[in-house]
Amino acid sequence: MRIVDARCTIGDGRHSTLSPDELVDRLDELGVEAAVVGPPDRCLAVYNREGNELVRAACVRHPGRLIGFATVNPWYGDAAVEELGRAAAEGLVGLILHPPRQGFMLVDDVAEAVLEAAGELGLPVYVGTGTPAYSLPLQLTEVARRFPHLRFLMGHMGHTDFWIDSIPAALAAPNVFAEISYKQPHVIADAVAKLGPERVVYGSDAPFNTMRLELEKFMASDLDDRERELVASETLLSLLPAGVLS
Image (cartoon, rainbow, N blue to C red):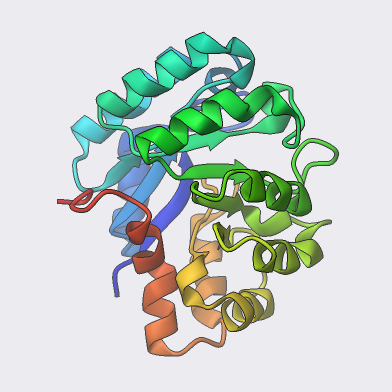
């Protein structure tokens, strides 16, 4: 079974550090084929180009193992749109928005220009959810309805306090895909049963979370073989350009 992790962070952050080489070693140890990577906190908030270059260089160093998502802070306006286009032209294949780090509420219109640009570039958008009042599952539903042509990854499914909203939120917006980091096996199985495995993706949120633990919870969930294959990699890969791992 192919396993592709939908969310990892590389670089030096305030609370955790993980180099691209260390991440690939972890993937090898656990039998994970590849991982989506984004930059650390300061690059989410301020130093977008530095972070996107860090991600691009890591993907060049580890082709077929690391998949690069860009980030831009929507408060930079036209400069954010320009940087997103530049990063996509350099080979990054998705957008990470982090409303708490970037200082906006998900339902604010400050991100509209960036989201429009992501749609024009064909990029899926990963949004971590579960932080009030910045980024909640039902807020993502509202945004997804405004941008029905975009594909959104609901990061962490509302994490801890708002997980109960995550499945109803995704059911209300068919362009929202649930990423299962931090979720217990019964929640994973419930998401697959109600959304279908074509709308659920595996992710670990390493290094802030333990990759081995997330894999164990995923493997302990009550899924059949085909459902597990879809969640482990195929659903995520369907959102990315063909041949991204070749």
